[in-house]
Image (cartoon, rainbow over all chains, first blue to last red):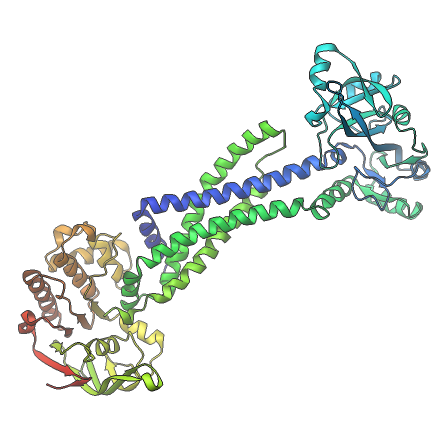
Length: 386
Length: 224
């Protein structure tokens, strides 16, 4: 027996109750949008949390094995950077310094922690958007580039720069000049960022030993195999550093935010809530359809239709609702991503694999609701019909 | 071999102390083409007997052969297969409200390999509807039909696939005199032209004259 006949019956049954059908579609669409938004925010927040490692340019990196996230690095001796040059494939080893300091809002004087990132700006190991034209100016003493995507509590720095040109601000106990802005973005670990040359970093972070560094970006000669060099370096260097590829560095950072914080859980929980609400709505609709047709279903059973045929009718209805709800759901989500991305500066985009994942989740949700509603079919007993 | 042949059939509801027998040692045969009316007071077991013959319930005691299928100990699959060869007419029409009259009739044909596609099923459905005088309502939804018209569609549905036996339970109970008359007349015409027997449970004295034989039940036994 073809599955098309029960599916057609399911569709005719759904179509007959327009209001019920529309509310079911709206329910599935709601669940779909909710899950898309949760997964979108989750991905966007992880993207912004990993903006710093994403912006680093290098085939391999050295980090301290105890570093859990880049906003809170464990430092290690600078000499490890120079030791890597013993491997002929390593062309360049650029130490990167990171620390947090106190920023004084230039307008109202409030204080806020800012992440300072210092490195040899001419080495090309770090490429934040907007950095390249500022490199000559950053060579001057006590100059920084401010991350214009920092949280607004740092003051309207971009607007002031555009109006008055380079300006002085106070970081820690030192007055520095902002020569321009770069784009990096606030993350969970840092509300704002300032980028500078390593010499200026030492001037701002006086209490740090200059021989201690937080991260090393390694550039390899063309044609070198990063994995082979990684192995050679791991064998060469002592246990106070770990050699990772760029992808591993990003994954390391992302893994911290996913597992060591409740953020991943919160969004998974939000998605689950959306699915449960959608499932309950679909279940109600399917259950009502079965319950209001019990006599007819029992008649069909008496006529010799198998229980499997009726189960296919319920599952067919579930599948139709999933499909009809998903299409407007994904379209609405694409539109909402656009609106929210403009409003929050979060990198929200529809991605194909997320679309496939949500499609599978929505069909799973409807199938589960269908399985629950199916139990009501047992009440359709043809022996009670006479 | 009669289409319906029962011997020593017994049936009880409930368990243990609450066990209540509704059929006791009952014998009945229905010959081919015969129209048998089953009457009796409520609680006499008529409906239970009909559900046993219709393979809607599992047998408990005795022997019951319907269209050559022994039902004592028959598995569910055999009972489902037998039900496809029986036309049921219920007190309520139980038509699917979201299907037209023709679609309702055509649905019963989905189970029969002789009608392999939609066009064939709908053709047969319209033929059946015209035999019960409902051809002009083929595209109407049940909600637009009167009670008698709906019951005639139900008759067309029960007879569409050419069953070997018709079982009907109070098909005229909810109908006025003329509609009830129309329904039993259409059943009778269809049965007599194809030779299929009808077993009909009724309280309705207005239709007793269509029967070849009236069987009276009381307390789970046949009394006349």
